[in-house]
Image: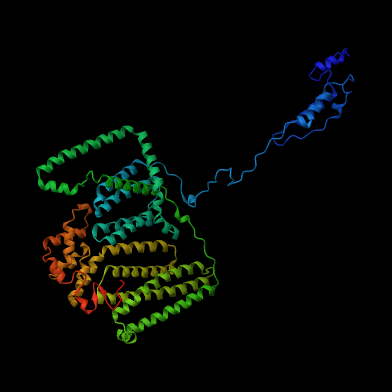
Length: 616
């Protein structure tokens, strides 16, 4: 009885029986502690129930033979009802599940984008600001030499950004850049709107290629408009540069603003005094300084933003261009040799038969054509030109598909590809020559127009493309994409420099001198570029042809930077020899849409044959 209080009052499970001289630990205590430790939950696995130890469950454990309290401790630690429940494990993530955030996948062009460049340096920011200011001041009055003036600081901004990024000037980059600036000379030289539009679009494409440095087909095609991809990044890049420079040099910004304000104040004060002192100086100053009014404020602001954003996009692209050459086109599955070669051989035979007939017609003369078909020269020429133009375009598509599917694994396959496609290119060149000959015959009969000279120029460029394809078959196709792009830009530049309106007027004037017939209703709608040629006409035809141009030039108040050289030269000619006949006289000559040759079956520059008319 004396041992019970000690066993019940001792919570540690250590008993000190009466008469014992030392402390003794029951033998079941170690097993109980081990079982309790094994019953603790682990971080790696859930706890598992442990069987009770037989020593701990025995009531006769211990040195004294009494039942210690460890007999009740072991069952408590190993009881399943008293163990902690296993932790609940989270289910594995399921992409796209209803409770998961959307998975953000990288864009298709993410691998093509380089690292973000450092903030824009001060030289780039200054050139960009100059571009924006010049755009607001000069571009609001029209296009002329001002477009070239605005492009110069934008090109400098791109050059500064490229140098800061460590890019080197390469021959093809210089070719694109020089070609783009040369194309911007067309608005400065020509008054006609359609060559100007082609030149500006081509200049944008060449500038984008100069910034990207593309060389493959995807790179050249997408890189020509890839500058648009840098509009948003360019604005953010420029803003980072402005914030960084503003934090580092606040004192210098204040000094620059004060210096600019003082310089402007001096120019305004002394310029006003000199202008009031001399009328000639006032007139010169009025011509040089842009006329900016409050009414034009929204339009000038829009032009400022266009120049700012465009220059930032160009500079950002020069610093870190998107690598459009990284886009690859999956190659086509090579076909069997006869599967692709046989259709092209049949096409070559068809081309050869057509060309043989053309040679017979040209050698036999058009009298045989008239006898066989009942068509005169012009009708025969008009009948086939557009068909031959479409045949030329479709041949380019056939060559592209053949190159995609033709096998080139062996030397024999490559030789067959060169032979079949080379023959097709040569025969197509003959078709191009036949189409141009038909156009020449039609122009000789009915005169030259803008549309006729345009499609003839396009046919000439297509012939150049086939020559380049032939050269690529001999020397390799590495430079073919860039060579075709250069040929297109060169064709647009040449088309603008020859002045199409002047060529149209010149041909019609010569035709009038030879045949005495002219379409004044059409010629009076030409631009100022045609004035030097039309000035050779006798009166009253000269005045009737130039009456509309003179009225437009007198009503125009464009400043020097928005006036082309063609307009200036036409204004000088008409100032020396103004129009001298009235409107009624011109109506008597048929300038109201009906020309002198109407009684012979022609009207308004179009051939009248029952219900048919000339579509071009």
